[in-house]
Image (cartoon, rainbow, N blue to C red):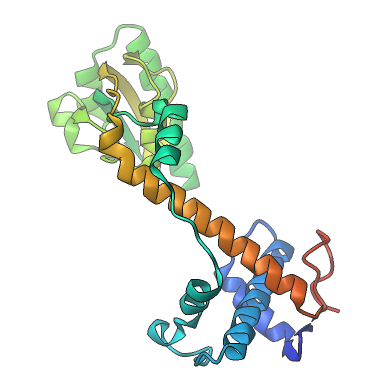
Length: 255
């Protein structure tokens, strides 16, 4: 078990909390769950010290706003100034452009995400279609013959695409391509795509005035996270915690 000052956190509570902290291993999930419960308990104890009304663990979100009130009262969070925002803009100009525009044709060899056999067959067929296209095959004809997308009726054309219009795994690959046939199938949740970029119009630089408020919001949120993390470290340092150590990686969760 874990003790936070005079409060005990049972192993059962950590195991129940694990469902909210997916991780690559059970041990890592337990670590995240234990830390979340300890930090939550530290917030609760500090709020009670200050006389805040603290709701039960099963209260709704509106009743559990003591954490935000605690942070508002105890954590100094500076606001980003204009010169900081402009400095960030100048140092990261490449991030601030309009979305590139692509004209794309594709052939979708469909397979469900959980159909391993079907996905292997779709991959093999996609590779074969690419070979046919490299040998001079007709894209529109191959789209009509093989594609599971309604775009097969227009030669596989997806029209003009900008970022955010397709699923992320497809977009991540396609927006990095140059015009022409891509020589590998592109995998997505829908199956495998044979992709031909007809035309690419690069994104255009944005003026500082167009992105200033987004930069300010980003920097303010970054500073907020840092300030809260430092506040949590202070609470941990001032507490008596038994059964868990924040200082040593790999320390036992339960003792």
